[in-house]
Each structure stands twice: as structure tokens, then as C-alpha cells.
Length: 206
Image 1 (cartoon, rainbow, N blue to C red):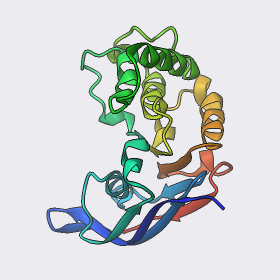
Image 2: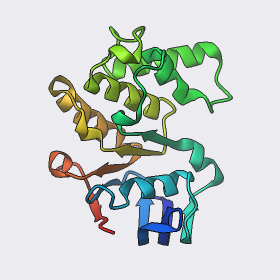
Image 3: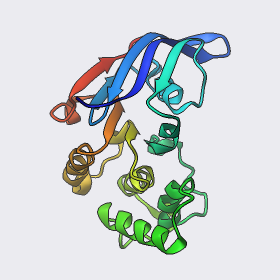
């Protein structure tokens, strides 16, 4: 039986005394592929922030399998949350996903970055600033940053919003491969594109 990674019980959360998430219970196990859907403003991203520990719930409990799991969660935000004017290269964005890896040498980190750049199909973009990327290329860059540290749990926030058609098939294949060793939580207002991959689904409508 797969190990329980995250146990959420009767969690409510919000901002400035306004509840956005109400009484949500959820269990995430190893190799889960969970789809979370619901309307904009329904609390999907708030739930992600609760799992990541970025906000504290107003009520309820969030239990992680072990203390180190928080550092083993890969997170890919919505691409429209990234400032494309910020002067940073694709390879540097991907490498930033290793910032918490204290036991790796610089050469090991460089090799991991190279492997991840290839895995994301970004070898011709590695030395370009993110401002020159298409929406799909930026998405691949953010996915590379999220998976470079080999996370136990991968959280994707609206990943199918900016998938370029040339990468779509590879992207979904990549998720299926990652799911062999990584639990995935995919947030989307439209589950049609990934319905065949999702193993269970939660609808949030607060």
C-alpha cells in the first residue's frame, strides 16, 4: 500500500478574515495523481498555499508524512505569475530549484541542470532570458525548476493554460513518467485535457 504523504482534515482558510476555503478534507498518497478543479476564486490556489505551508489554516489540520517533506515538494505556479522582465536565464531559473540541496557539489548541480534542460526540451533556450520565451517555453522552464530536485510531491497550478501544441504530447507523457515515482496534484478549472491521467478528482466550489 502506498504511503500517506499529506493528510488534510476539515481545513478552512482565507485572507483578511474572509474564508476562501471551507471544511476541506483530503489525503495524498505516494504515486497519486489528483486533479483539483473548480471555478476561479473557488479556493484551489489557497489549498495549494496551505499544503506548501505558505498560509496557516483558520481551522483544521495539515499533517505531512515527515518533517523533510516540505523541502521535497515541487511547485509549478501559473505562468502569468512570473515577471518576464526580470533578467534571469532559463538555466538559472531551473537551477534555482536546487537552492535547498545542501549536499550536492557545484558540478553535480550543473549536471542535474543539464539533464533537466534536456528533459524539458529546452537545450536551445538554456542561455536565453525568460523574457524571450513563449508561454509554453516558460511553462517548461517552470516545470523544470519544480522537478529538478526529484520531489516526492509535485503541485501544478493550471499547467494546461499555456501548453504549446508542439510540447503538449511530450508534457503529458512527462507527467505520466514522473507519476511513477512522484505524487502529482494538478489544479485546473478544466480537467478535460488530463482526465485520462488523473486517478482521483476533487471539486472545490466555495
